Amino acid sequence: MSKPIIEIQGLDFYFKEFKALDQVNLTVPTGSIYGFLGPNGAGKTTTIRILLDLFHSKNQQIKIFGKNLLSHRGEVLGSIGALIENPSIYKHLSGRQNLEVIRKMVGVPKSRIDEVLKIVRLVDNADKKAKNYSLGMCQRLGLAAALLTDPELLILDEPTNGLDPSGIIEMRELIINLNKEHGKTIFLSSHILSEIEKLATDVAIIDQGKILYEGKLEGLQEKGKGYQLTVELDQVDEAAKIVRGLNFTVSETNSRTLVIPIEAKTDIPKINKAIVDQDIDVYQLKSSDEDLESIFLNITKKLDQ
Amino acid sequence: MNIVLELKRGISAELYKYRRTFVLWLLVLAPAFVPIINFIILFKKGDQIIKEGQNAWEVLLGNTIQPGNFLFPFFVMVIALFVNSVEHNSNTWKLIYTQPISRLATFISKMKVYVLMVLFSLMLFAFFSLMVGYLLKVTSPELGFDQAFDKSLIFQACFKIFLASLGYASLQFALSQKSKNLMLSMGIGIAGVISVMILMNGWEYADYHPYGYHIFALRDLGEDFNIWSNMTTVYRSLIVALVVFGLSGWDMVRKRIV
Image (cartoon, rainbow over all chains, first blue to last red; front, side, top):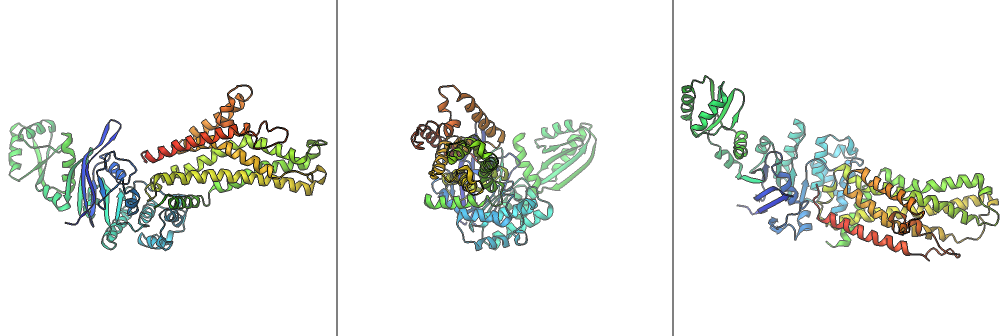
């Protein structure tokens, strides 16, 4: 296994009384596209802000490039490119001038601006004022700024958030290209699993400040080996009670259907019989392989129950 | 990386980002405002304003410093707001504070550029006022602008105003940096100016009011008009600036940047 580029161990973080991160451990392998998944408010952005030293963590449990973040702050930040949530762009300046502001701060040669503009495909619009940019262009400009120092590690917080489908595809291609062609390790957060699924080699799932899964994407798929049974009926609440009585979990209910993760198809007649025995009419039984979306929902919902 | 290099980079980035902004025009146009009015008044009514036996330059200096002293705090408020709102509005605090420059250096870069802007405008103000005198010497020779006068006094007076303004300038900077809400820093600034105007007419401790240091700094200069004779409020201003800039920087170094 390649050596980790980011190592976080037992990280806690509080906002006043509220515990935002609870014993977070993450190990990001060098060269990976690492998807950091979780619903809104799970602690993704907080973790990323700590990684970039925007929030100070009290005890130093973070190593990036094998170096302690707080004692090597300048050095570490110099090798990280970051794009955090909504774009940080001076609207009154052109794209190129925006990059020039950052270039002056990091001290790389001027020619680097044209290189990064080419990477993010903004050459044609580089001299337009940033206030006329679409959100997709703003995100790409942000990425260009992150690339100025030619960092080994890119930390991208919800890079596709708010983009239209073609913007999402473009961003995705860009990320894969940066990983494959330029050899960058990419740490990427998102609340949309299908996005991560198309990109990531490794994933971590966080909810309510706790890491629920960390490992290879395939591992997550294996974890969800099984089926998902959807039962259509009238008396949903009563049926749910019966199903729980049989030691199954109900992952979703709405006015006419129950969704039940099951391990084998032999569970289907068992459940059906139990419900029908209680004089509840069943209109439809539908089983399907569990997709990542439902694995994700299952993992993050289990806590609520 | 050492702090000198970090500051050099921080300041050059900071200066660059004001390209094509209103603030650059303001830095040049605002100091021209009072001198232009002075020129018009003295050109039209100079013979009534400058009395027999008065030195025309002294009258000009008086007419320059007094309105300047009143207007200057408002100018400082606007500049303080501007250098900070450029980050608030474009969501760029997190951008500049994730660059490989120490937080302290990034803070000092902005602070230094702000202080230099204030100084630059004041020196320009002195220069424009001087030009008014020279221009009147040509257009209206009867007003007496050919009399002897130490022209450096205008620059000295403006430099003293600068030093005595750093106190409230630091407060305005800290407020504008801390809060996105421009009503807060503007409100406190305006309240500061107005309260000192009222208090200076009698309250014995008015001398301690930071929004009045620049006014008090040019009072009681004595017969020989020695600008540097009375330094009390200048020292007070510098102490306030040191404390407030210090606290503001300390806050920026440790706070959570959203």
